Image 1 (tube, rainbow over the protein chains, first blue to last red):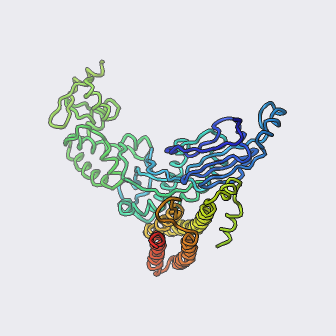
Image 2 (spheres, rainbow over the protein chains, first blue to last red; image 1 turned 30 degrees about the vertical axis):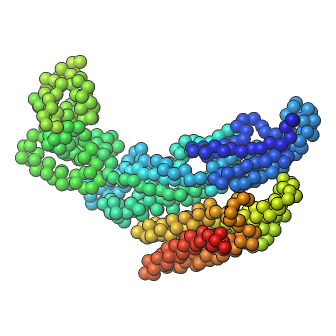
Length: 347
Length: 174
């Protein structure tokens, strides 16, 4: 039997798909009287002659186009066997896209007056959820004429919006609260970001349903990173390096410089460490020369070796674990001899 | 609100009109129209509350800019309840029973659900008034109490919706 009406339905779950166009490519010639079935979690944007005419809700709808069955075939002959009355539908998932991840790719710099370096570097991660609030706006403004549109196509933009608001909010909050106070304000910050981002999401036809901060903590940026960011003068840098060496000497096998820089910069422990170190340096302590790099001691920690190699301590540990650099493991700590380091450099 | 029902029943498409001529289907079509008009009504209620939800977010932004971030979380409690109410009323049961089910929900019973949903619209005035109260209390000692009142009123909306299922159960039990 010749085709008279169409039944358009998209029963897929649309797990990560926000919009699905019917047809996926080309032009459709949906006939007048064709049925569009829409599920409870969907809306349809009906396009005719290139215009987004309406949004159809859940249920069964009868399409109205100029494509009158049988007659359209005759009309189509004059247009190279294609209909001049195009119509297509965009299925839009109205469900909540939950548990989307966000995180800070770079630490957020906030003021921390009277503590440590006077600034803190904060890093965090968490989840958010969103849904389409205005299908017609979203389809016409964001999706265009694509066959389908997935969450991954827009998540980068959403995350950028969220992080920008988080940064703004942290800046505003730390103007009157210390970084330590932020720990007790996680829920408030989460709600604040949600409230501040509403309009940005609305501008592209979306709605931010929830925003949760899973963790917000001082960054584990090393003293090297901080110096590269121009946040440390030479004296502070030397002190932080020495503190790392001390900590390494105590027991940490990884030798990362994060503890001093992260907690020191964020929480003000740097002050305590620096005064302690100053005392040690005045008393002829051993850590300072190693950190300054003037004399290579016979036995070194990964952090001290890293100073001479001008790489991160993590890279030194990685070289040890790969067997490229010889070292002794005492308890949980690695110790590297001067000769082993020279052999390593010779290759 | 009967205008919504009249509009829905007046805009029957040709397939519905054909089905309405089939013996036994007329009542089914009418019930379907009532459910559709109830759905439209519920969407109208949800849209009213969407506006209120947006106002709460706006007040939260004001609180942040005025250094009152500690209150943002309290306001969020109200926002979440309003969100819950909106989502639930949008996805509420239609009051459906199959043609051959033992319990059948007739047109007049569906009208009761419709009336109940129409009454939910009145709750938006109470929430709106509570939001006004928070707005005028900003920067005063009464802000705490105003926010608490808003949370309470928002909870009442959720409670009222929960009773909707009881109304439908009563209908089914009759």
